[in-house]
Image 1 (cartoon, helix red, strand yellow):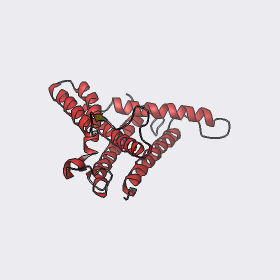
Image 2 (cartoon, rainbow, N blue to C red; image 1 turned 30 degrees about the vertical axis):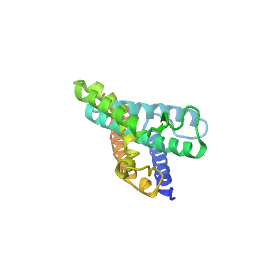
Image 3 (cartoon, rainbow, N blue to C red; image 1 turned 90 degrees about the vertical axis):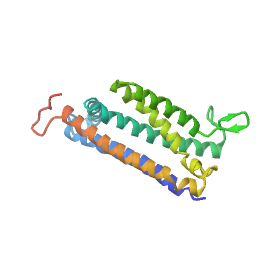
Image 4 (cartoon, rainbow, N blue to C red; image 1 turned 135 degrees about the vertical axis):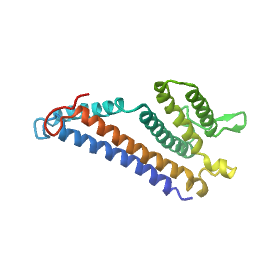
Length: 212
């Protein structure tokens, strides 16, 4: 069985996240108030750059529209849950039960993780439809994204009506496409959040900080 597509996607996701974080950190260090990374002030400069990087992300998120933040929460939750589900299932398959993590059973029947995923998505989706508060919808998007990821991670089982999770049909299926789409969309939204935060936190080219 060829697991390279799944391993490749996981490595790509982790690598892209680390690279994007490092790039933003370096960018903030260069444009922000941190002193240049020269001997004697590297630690102090790094601390200031790290604090400003967090401030950029927080301010960019806070100043975003409710719809944009809701979508960002959903996509990030979807991507993180998808990766966690794949990694956990892989570990259980090769190592057996890991602490509280193991095969979920009801009597003698194995319960696939798409079942709690469907329940979570239905409950939070219904709550989101009923709610008229955009602030609540923003946070409901997190469990909804998690539920959707748990469900779609086993989409091949629903399509094939048999357990093909670790087969070729299960691996090279809609999961990889959906995960890639979520990562790309989440990355673009994150870029917009950080760009907006930079305008509010970091000094402009003229040396002044944009008003909040």
